[in-house]
Amino acid sequence: MKLRVIPIISFCLLVLTTWAQNPKIKKADEEFDNYAYIDARKIYLNIVKDGYQSAQVFKKLADTYYFNSEYIEAVEWYNRLLMSYPEAMETDYYYRYAQSLKSIDQYAAASKMMEKYRQSIQNTTVNNYALNTLLDSIETEYSIINATESSGSSDFGPSFYGEKIVYASASKNTKGSKTDDWTGLPFLDLFEAEKDSIGKLKNPIALKGNINTPYHESSTAFTKDGETVYFTRNNYINGKKKRGKNRLVGLKIYKAEKNTKGEWTHIKELPFNSDSYSVAHPTLSIDEKRLYFSSNMPGTLGKSDIWYVDILDGDSYGKPVNLGNTINTIERESFPFISESNNLYFSSDGHVGLGGLDIFVVSLNIKENDEKVVNLKKPINTNQDDFGFIINETLNSGYFSSNRDGEDGSVSDDIYAFYESCDITLEGLVTDALTGEPVSGAMVTLIDDKNNPINEQRTSESGTYSFTVFVDCLKQYAIRATSEDKKYLPTETTLTTPNGKNALQVDIQLVPPDCPPDDLGCRLDLQPIYFDYGKSNIRPDAEVELAKILQALKEYPQLKIHIESHTDSRSSSSFNLKLSENRASSTRKWLIDHGIQSTRLTSKGYGETQLLNHCANGVKCSEEEHQLNRRSMFIIKN
Image (tube, rainbow, N blue to C red; front, side, top):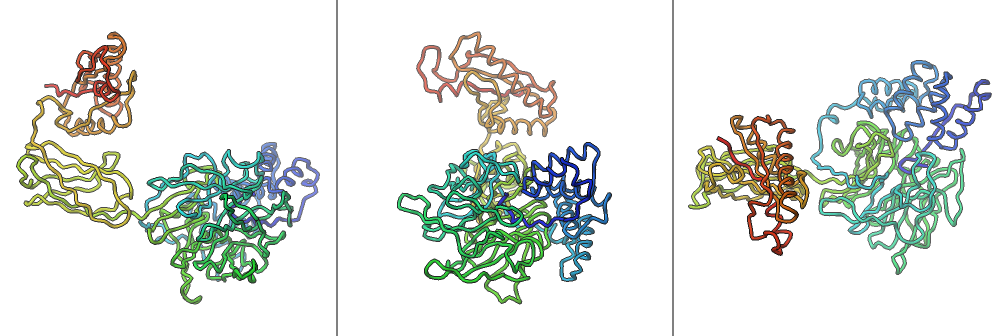
């Protein structure tokens, strides 16, 4: 069973006689009732393909997609249910259909279904679920990166563990060889990973000890000393699993302690668990005296609610307390997280959102009547499922889970890092490199990694410039200075943006031209176009320089260039001549492929005949010295 949400499913007990007599349908129902959605789906699809249809088949087919967050297909089957069997559209199906519609950007249709849902439950206190235009248009200023895109598995539920991040993954390295019938993926295990310089997760390893089992583990909460962890697991302990109502292997919260070897041991089930309902997704209060979690236990207002218990002495706990109807709705609330400012972050599809699960925040420092639940908006939230949010509010950065970048529902879950977008003020002085005198009227341009201008400004009479931009944090940009009077060569310098709000001083020196009149590379202050040994393909670093030549060719349509390519001295002269021709051709082809007319470009290879250094045949040289000879040059043609 998938651990991202707590499943609460009601089924119609009315069964047609023909339904019961059909062995394929009976088999599909058995798979469905055992939450083997992938297997059930295959059978239902074959039944429909053979010409049979009914409200029950359409409902269950749609549900197999909905409960795996595959909303495009869910919309298809909920729509067929509504068109063919409108009388069978029970309350839950209006809701699921509306959520699926929002998740594929059909907000107007979703609002109509939500209104039918509200009418069907005859509850005027429920939000009308029409999309708030303010929510859709205003974005919070965060930069987002996929932190686990290279893992190739379903990853979600991050938590802080010292300087590391612990999360659940259905990777190939999980314990045991079984797969979950719900999703068709391997069962989840818990992994800890390091963070690289931009927040991506690297070097994941399974948590040590006996915390991982052949079934699901997920959603951890660590004490500040790192010695105790609360975590979610299927109803499985001491090598045995238990099933509750509807034959479901439910979710429970367990506690583990770390021994001197760094292994997690002494696994204990918390006393407020039950075989008849699920308890999941723990998080600790700031003082670690209270444990928050999600559950569908008796007293729950909807599909699942946020609860808490007091942590008492002697490994005992208080009575579970529901957080009430300001936070909880008649739908799903899950994945709570308490920040250092005592803010409760959680996921819900019951509050007004963009589609699927959205992430919300509410302060726990204010009185109940003044509580206000706030949607985190874009880019944190999307029309897909966004959940499992954790944040370091001091740094205004953290992690969350989402399936925004995939088309396979929950199978596409990844963990994303987020940072506050950088509010950067760039200022500096542009001077003549030879005289030190300020240069007025020079154009200073901030350029992104795709050579697109972000902002620009001319220098004042005193040679100064200053402008403020919102850019991605921890990302490399370039600042280019040019002068219209041809007295100076264009000059570039790079910078990496810091986190948060900063002022950066970037002074630039413009150099008078001392290049040969036909040397385009010198005039554009290009880095050489280098090649790997024995190869003629264009390297990524070469593409950066070629993009500058491309821009010059586009700005000056009359410009024509000749490409000269060279090799080092290794290999035979005939091989090197052919290799240099290939390098010249691949350089020319790159420019043609990017829109330059072939008539403006010529090319020739010179083999090893024009070495730049002493590295001739038989001379021992370093790889760096040989690299200098494997190059392409650009000559302006008259």
